[in-house]
Length: 271
Image (cartoon, rainbow, N blue to C red):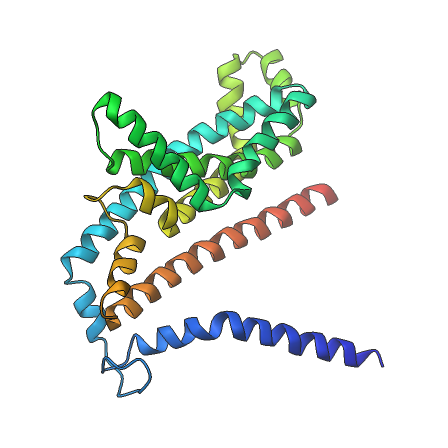
């Protein structure tokens, strides 16, 4: 009697995973199909990947995506880390209030964020005489990345002993020396995780980029969307496969880092 619910739950879980990942596996398989057919397998080939790396439009959008993602992740990590430290040093009432505000962009729909940022940039553009482009796209990515960095750094700040900074200053450190020699190493795992999450969010974003990039700049997700509106080429399967594998690798790295950090903390507690 006790085994049936377990077997049933495993079957149900397996069906859910099959429903979620079967289309992705089919896409990956047909990215190696020698014909343009999306239903008939004609043979194995790497031709679509070769054509992908000779497509100037895709290479240009990939360069833009990586550039925006790297810059947005760096700036958002610095700003989010200092913001998290500021929230941590506030009184609990004000800290809870600002953290609740910080959670709004995370819970908010991407289309709402994208439309609101688009209206802001367009209205400011009429006054400051600029157009939507790489700059507005970068600012938009920094804006929605900062809350994720704060949420990654805050748990490490709460785990840190508050007396460490005072002890370092009593031993002769200035506040800045105590900051980068004591506090930063303590919260570094949260900072790195926040940066990786910010990079992943940027490289995978479409909706906010679509509303803030303008007509002269395209990210990889926007290029894929434009290709699907025309005749679907097998190159879409190839570029989508590479993007999926890249995001999957980043997520695996983040999870492995978190597991290793938890194991280190358990060992320290046992000691």
